[in-house]
Amino acid sequence: VQLQASGGGLVQAGGSLRLSCAASERTVGNYNIGWFRQAPGREREFVGGQRWTSSGPYYAESVKGRLTISRDRAKNTEYLQMISLKPEDTAVYYCALASKRTILSELYAPRGYEYWGQGTQVTVSS
Image (cartoon, rainbow, N blue to C red; front, side):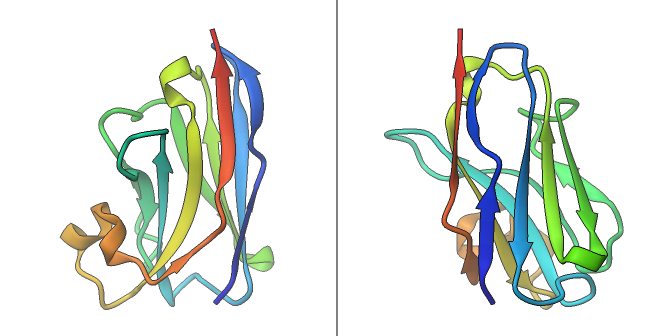
C-alpha cells in the first residue's frame, strides 16, 4: 500500500490547514488509519486515528477539539482538518495504516503501523 500525504504549509497562529492522505487501495474496512506528527528533536507523536470499522475517529488529548479526521471513501483519501493552530503544532505530519487485526492500544504508537506516507511539513508562525 502506498500513501501520499499533502496539504502542509506555512500558516500563522490561529489559522487552519487540511492535510490529505491518498491511499493506493481501499482503506475503509481494511485498515486502521493513524495520523502522527514529529517535531525536530522529538519522538513521533500520535494525534488521531480512525478504526477500520469506521466507528468514529479518536484523538490525542493534546489536540482534541482542534483536529477533525474525515474520509472520502470514493477517493480512498483521509483528511486531517486542523484549526486554531499554534506554533507548537509545527511538525512533519504523517499518515499511516495498520492492519485491522491491530488492537486499539497499539494504534497509539508508531510501532503499530505497517505503512507510512512520506510526511508533510506544517509550520505555524507566531
